[in-house]
Image (tube, rainbow, N blue to C red; front, top):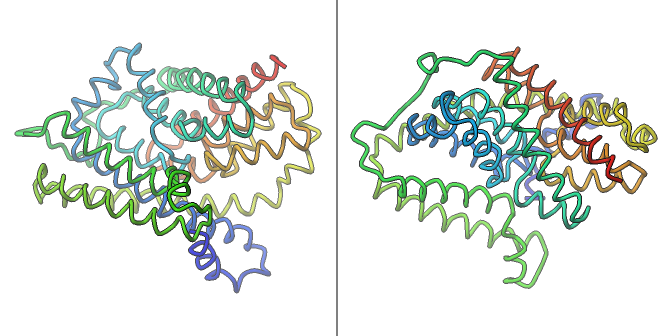
Length: 374
């Protein structure tokens, strides 16, 4: 994957000495590290949600009329199974919204999924310790629910009949819930394999941590999973349904991905303006000003779910207080300028702005509360 990143970045080499180079460098890094491993599998999952998961299953758990004591915890916890960034979760969020999920649970899912997952929690424990890991999980759970409730209170619920481009296969559907669950589990396994979750196990098998030696086994596992997926699709789905799935995934890709790239390019340019180590003194104490600034910066910059832990660890080594550090751990993976720009055509400018504001406020408040325990 590192070599793929270098080859992508080489395309932009003629612009190295121009002012747009940081933006192009950020785009090249994203394409080389996230396109194949995170974004593309996410679009296939989103397309599958839109085609194979009928709105009765969605609305039963996360619909506008569902029991909120079930809908919001399910939305906050279900994203923990996925290893996606703030941009990678957008296709899945779109599929959920189009299938009739309530605005509150849907935005709860949008906040929680990139902010915390099993891999991110494990990495947080490794670099920052048990206290950071437990508090991060709890704060994401509760803040995402409150953000979802805030979205429901401040924004109108979109009637189910107004949703567009919904493809539902619920009439004469002979598939069981177990078959659908198996299908989606395979898709999720393809995603988490491509993101390198199983690399530690592969490293033990090949007795090497060299990226070049890990890449081929990882590709081999993905090919095996795709073969299993193909067998399942041939046995349980009609050809017409598979075509609809691929078309749905393609339409979501062209709807969202160009906006993501544009936002990442702008983030690269903003790295020149916001030099975090230079202003580290602002975050040396646990006050609301420092947490609020950390939340704003985190919500603008593009930090991957896993990479963000490394960045926060580095910032702590330079003197960042645990409070603003936690704030950055919450806001940075949850939203970014690219994800908000891509969210606008999906949810509208008003909902996107309110969601961004709520993430900034609740992340800052959560970080302040956590910092007060030190």
